[in-house]
Amino acid sequence: MKSLSRYVILIITLPSITLADGIAIDKVYHPYVQPLEREVEWRMTSADGEQTHRFGLGKAVSDSLFAEAYLIAEQNKHNDLKAKAYELELKWQLSEQGEFDVDWGLITELEYEYHQDNVELASGLILEKAWGRWVGTANLWLIYEHSPINAEFETALALQTRYRYKHYLEPAIEFYAGQDTRGLGPVLMGDLKFGPGKKLHWEAGIIFGLETDSPDNTWRFSTEYEF
Image 1 (cartoon, rainbow, N blue to C red):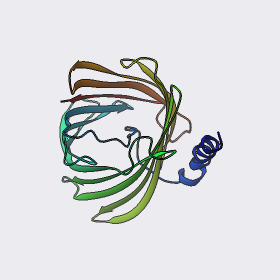
Image 2 (cartoon, rainbow, N blue to C red):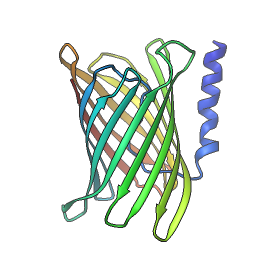
Image 3 (tube, rainbow, N blue to C red):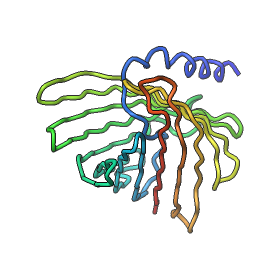
């Protein structure tokens, strides 16, 4: 109980540390890597009539390292869909599941927005803790953004608490904090299994803005086919 209490206190105090800056609502990452896993991913966020799509291909490079490449596209209010950026993502599983009181991971992303010649380098620390059917996850981000006219550091935070009801249905609550975003809302997710090592993971949710600078609501959807 003492270790769980320390974890809860950490999660409660994180927003006060990281609310100053950040990135938009997107996804909560988990620290685990499955050996030999391959993945095809699509995810989308929609706010204020505009959508961001990510199309990814990923593969486990080792028992603890997963690499994924993305094409990022935006769809505006006129339904024009245009590619805007490329991204390379690496995720390390730093501890075995259950080895410590909290499971640890590290993620690094390099994004290049070619229309505006912008580069973004982001690194995130992933923490996850399970107690009974409940699972708490935290992503703490440090981001460096560089453009031809400006360069700056930002931070961001994503929190998720989910209930493992069934493998195909897990309700969750997510909180995001970034430079222009404070959001909280419900998410549903689950796994549809098709055979040994094959499954479709899906997520759908709505995040409500908590401040005037945040979108009133942001829809987010994702699917990952793992094989």
